[in-house]
Amino acid sequence: MNLFITIRVLDVVDILLVALLLYQMYRIIKGTIAFSIFIGIFLVYVTWLVVKAMNMELLSTLMGQFIGVGVLALIVVFQQEIRRFLLLIGTNYQVSRSFGLEKLFASEKLKPTTNLQIKEIVRACDNMARSKTGALIIIPHNSELKDIIRSGEKMNARISSALIETIFFKNTPLHDGAMVILGNRIAASRCILPISERHDLDPNLGLRHRAAVGVSEVTDALAIVVSEEKGTISLAQHGELMHKISLVQLTTELEKVIIEEA
Image 1 (spheres, rainbow, N blue to C red):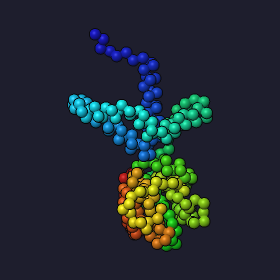
Image 2 (image 1 turned 180 degrees about the horizontal axis):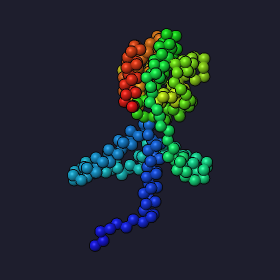
Image 3 (image 1 turned 90 degrees about the vertical axis):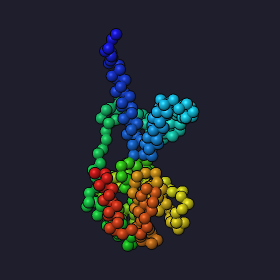
Image 4 (image 1 turned 60 degrees about the vertical axis):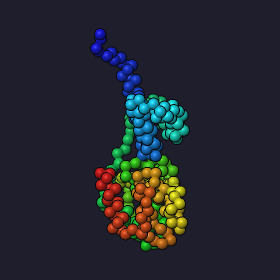
């Protein structure tokens, strides 16, 4: 009896290619809603394996039917990510005519927001509230909000109160929509956010507040809203909206985000 496993060179190449594809797929869906959906599908699959191993025939059959159409479900759910993955491969092929490892594995490491930059954000919100300048600022916890960033104008700019106030000044072309702050940079402005469809929200709330609640419902982001009508600052997190918060409360919540990211 042969106790040794024969590993061919092609087996090693096969494993490396699969690892490369999985890593690329992870990079594409990381920071998007699709990542949470993928985790949910994976947990359902693990549950089905456990149920099957315990010989729970009825539940195993029901879940088996769900798993049976899993491929079609994945194509429907992840159609945008699959399209993006194919586009990534095509783009890399056109640019380099090869799968350059330095391009496929290229990844920028974000530096965390500093206390000085938190003060800049709070100062900007205070000034905009005083002047009744409407603003919507999104700060994620762990996700990168790639889909939302792609919907706006990419900036990659240094965080400063003057720049934030300038962007949201009503006569500038970038004032409409949301600003996304990622790490120590302003990643994008004029971004499009999902609108909350909850019926228990105050009917007097405008689209900025509903968008803030909406993005906090589907992501782990913290959303700051400066009201153009009342000159107040509100904060949305985990689908809940805190009205008329003080600058101290705003600073505290922002520091919590920074501590969790560090």
